[in-house]
Amino acid sequence: MKIEQIYTGCLAQGAYYIESNGEVAVIDPLREIQPYLDRANKNGCDIKYVFETHFHADFVSGHVTLAGKTGADIVFGPNAVTQFKSTIAKDGQVFQLGDITITAIHTPGHTMESTTYLLKDKSGKDYAIFTGDTLFLGDVGRPDLAQKIGDLTIDDLAGYLYDSLRTKIMPLADDVIVYPAHGAGSACGKNMMKETVDTLGNQKKMNYALREDMTKQEFITELTDGLLPPPAYFPLNVRLNKEGYEDIEKVIANGQHALSPDEFELAANKTEAIILDVRHQKEYMASHIPRSIFIGLNGSFAPWVGALVKDINQPILLVVEEQKLEEAIIRLSRVGFDNVIGYLKGSIEAWKSEAKEVDSVISISASTFKDAINNKCKVVDVRKESEYHSEHIPSAENFPLSKINDHLVSMPSDSDFFVHCAGGYRSVIAISILKSRGIHNAIDVAGGFDAIREVDILTSKTVCQSTLK
Image (tube, rainbow, N blue to C red):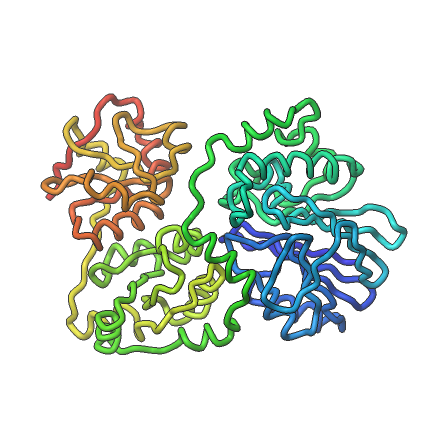
């Protein structure tokens, strides 16, 4: 028996490759399926099953393509309804895989079709559970992402989750291994550990949601407290996972359309496409196409695209290094953004060689920022509210990046202001959005709050005023 967790940091997502005696099951695969095919082919195995723990909201799964390439059965839990061929498992249904078995355990709550898969080894011993978004390490799945079913409320779903955990998962032995679908950084929970594998026994000790003395009402209150609104693309991804989608190979081919600077400019004007610059933030700050949006591949690229670009069908033109073009298209497709219509051949250097207009971003060091401030100018902190409340510059205003478009009227129009995040990635995204809206007087603080903390600004009672021109 072989179990391999294939973890994708950008999405904080774990897919699983399980192999036994020549047969393979893949749980919650990503859309690019080649890694699973390569593993099976290398070992001379056949992919028999693709198990889905639920209809994912934060990414488009690879179940449809993988089944199409291999003939594997797609398996969902009870209550699932798909528009493609699939097996809807009954609660307790057993699937043979080589010398082992995988049992579908219906665990509704995160969604009503949510299912945990229990793996028993060849001796019949409970060995591991693949919990999807039902049980994370340190947390459980949020109950507000399911598509509306009748009159069910968020509290109702939280109540179902309480029952699922206590009647289906907690009775299992402490040595059972827990393999969740997500880790820290995912928007599907709010308090996940950085670790991606643990024992159920340890989770019973330290996961707040598994406290033995916790009442259902206490669970509901704690689980639903402080939930932030889910990103707009979540329900759109659920629909794709239920209905199916275009083969990723076609999506990649469509996006690899090289455009000269003139063709690129014409396409942008004709299609009203977003120009998405995915280079490193330092390269974007030095020189970029006016009104292009920066979201760099070096950060949490796909989730930020999903959070800030509201429509997955939005046409996208890429500014990207050619060797990273396919990576950018794949990572966009993971969250359902399939409409890349081309890229700027030669990147920004080709654009500049044609003497086309460019823009830039002013960025200063934390020490320069410290020397430049007094008590009149605005500081905008674009970190999450929880980060801001943990520690922040006195009098800095918190406009989280995910809500930046809601605060445009709060930005000064006649004076410079400073923008920072934690490390310098999100602040440049925010500034690019502001510039695309005609606000050009934002100054980036390089290194963000991490750098600011080192120059002792936090002990000051001043806010800031730019002395830079």
